[in-house]
Image (cartoon, rainbow, N blue to C red; front, side, top):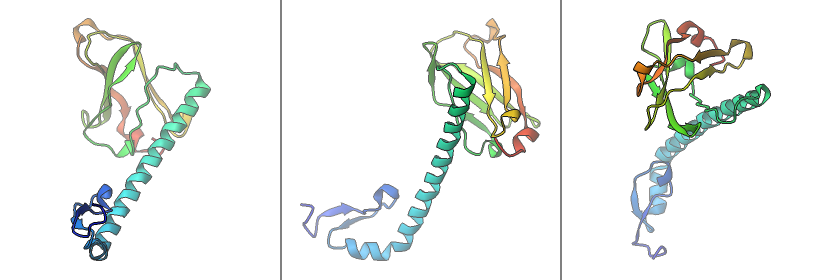
Length: 175
């Protein structure tokens, strides 16, 4: 069936975003007619991959530094590309530590001067003391926030700090 010239097939660039459904017979003509559109799709794919590679390099760098600092193996790393340029709120994936599910939220617009960071319980109401660490390319500029006063009245809500990091600090390179 895949050699039948009138069988419908998806464009070979479908995985990159081309939605054309063509026949085997018209595939060559489609490839020529859509060459510019396919080139643009490929450019977008390469740009996305560059972003993913940068994020993986950043995460790898953090892991290497954590090994040097002898961090707890259950810590959660959340890499946010272009952290200094972010606006609005970002929510992490759910992660497990100490046998419980959690997620984080960073709000870049909660305050004009600061970015806020919070830890949320997911599916439970436990509280925990925790530490947030924002890694900079220059270890001397790392930002650390220790939270050890998660009050009972915050049970089931997020807990953190509205003034985690000053926006002027975020504007510096390295984050």
